[in-house]
Amino acid sequence: MILKNNRTEDEEMMEEADVLIVGAGLAGLSCAVFVGLNGVAPLVIERRGGTSVLPKARGQNPITMEALRTAGLVEAIKAATPPGRPGITSVVSRSMAGPILHDHVVVRPDFTQFSPETPGMASQARAEAAMADRAREYGGEIRFHCVVESFAQDADGVTVQVRDTETDERRAIRAKYVVAADGIRGEIAAAIGASRIGHGLLKSVTAVRFLADLSELAGDNAMVIHYIQNAELPDGAGVIVSTDTPGEWVANMSADPDRSEVETEEVIRTLVGIPNLEFEVLDSVSYDYGHWVADRMRAGRVFLTGDAAHVMPPTGGQGGNTAVQDGFFLGWKLAAVLKGQAGQGLLDSYEPERMPYARAVVDWQAANLAERRNMDGLGKDIGAPMDHATLLFGYVCPEGAFVAEGSEPNAPFENPAQPSGRPGARVPYVKLEGINGDSISPRELLGPYFSLYTSDEEAIAAAKDCAEAFGIDVRSYHARSLAPLGAREGESVLVRPDGVVAWRGGAAGLKAALQTVLHR
Image 1 (cartoon, rainbow, N blue to C red):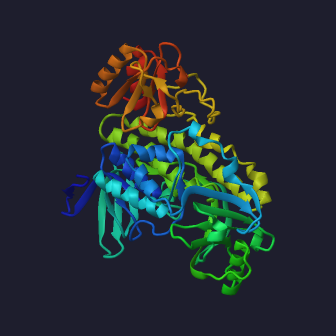
Image 2 (cartoon, rainbow, N blue to C red):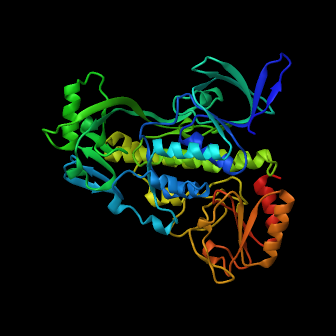
Image 3 (cartoon, one colour):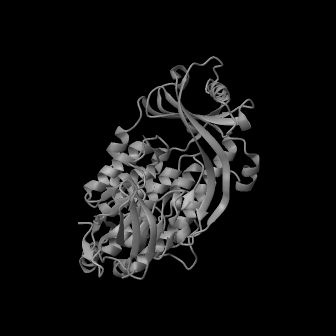
């Protein structure tokens, strides 16, 4: 059971939740899934009447797919691929009709050397639906039409006042922890004293959804996006992107409240590159591109995830991915503390591990925006985009829940083609030779448990003893050599549930390492 009722002195009923998640977007539902996967059923509240019905962010990078694999969601995400050949068109062009100025896919690194997973192409709407279903399967509850009116925290928990927007019913929920996934317009970040650091508003845009037969221009890829650079467009740039529905498109252009319907239609024709194009406008929405990261991602028992913690333009497709990964990296930690497997100090690692990466992604997306929409001033401030593979696969936590090697913090990025395997880094995508001749791939063995890779039988015995002593699941894999993981002779490698290397060393040091990581 997630909730139980306690009667207060004034006879009012107060609900209790281990984890209350505010927001059922990608960040909130991801946290719900990964808290649930690790054995704690959360309560999720959402102001909307359901999960998203708009395509919004599309695509899941291999890291996100690795996380979703641990929750059994990869097949659902792949099933949500839009119609067409399972490929991506992402180009800069003068119009959708051409000419093409730059092809992002052609120059993209080969990600198969860094991850066992291939990217997904599900829209935000379909990804949210899949995650909501899985969160419920893990025992979570999702309540829609609910808003937070106030909250107060103390040493033992957080009391949250919630209102049902349909019935106007108010109730108090007492939560041990609160995850704020309430988005860019959410109020929890400000309430915990978080400030926004960054360039702020970058650009206001209007997205127009329309129906048109663009099949001759689009090709047969399931996902199509054209970044248009054309002096005849407002501000000289715009975007055309496909949706889940064949024949339905979104045209993204600089916002102008005085632009007429006829002028909007002419912008769409310029973006497509067909002067006499016939189409039907369905609807439109205007919004802002922003660039900022909260200066804190935690205050006491309240954590910020997704757009509540970091906001970026969509150029590069990593906003939704970063939101999902926030939940993946936070979920197991919350569950471990709530189940008594770890001390509360484990939660102190969330901010120093995630904030540097959030800053890097926010800057990367903004640098892409500057390049793809001719924003020279922003480009000078932000600089050129980081190498794509380094951004996705080369991040190393500077500090956090691992046994650091050396007295100085880790450098935040390394060359993923030459992974160090050091604590704080992703466990590399390599194949180890098992003692019985089988193949062992650490990145394919992630799950709600710690993994120990070793060539030492004493370490396997030590792992079993530690699992019993700490009440945790530690799975051991016996390999002939751990050199592909960067380990020296006689060293074992401990990997966290989120795929981050926690420790390298001899069998005698395993217990102390787990005590450090879990703050026991």
